[in-house]
Image 1 (cartoon, rainbow, N blue to C red):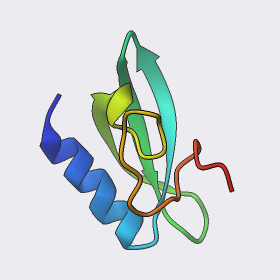
Image 2 (cartoon, rainbow, N blue to C red):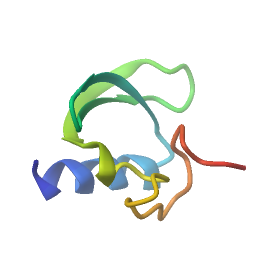
Image 3 (cartoon, rainbow, N blue to C red):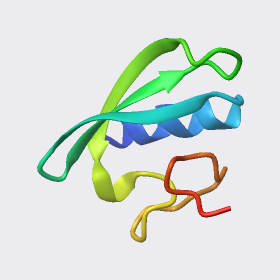
Image 4 (cartoon, rainbow, N blue to C red):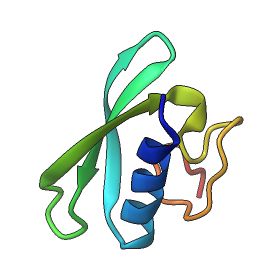
Length: 70
């Protein structure tokens, strides 16, 4: 999977957007990029599950993913 997908997710999070895993196939996930105000889906990216923010193997610079344990 592309580091471009993770960079797009990081930019989305840094801009205040939310995200949600909407599909899984093996170790690959599809992530919906959602607006911060109403959860409207604006785009999707596909990346390895281990690259998701907040997973044990994935860095979590913004802490806004579904695996964040706040």
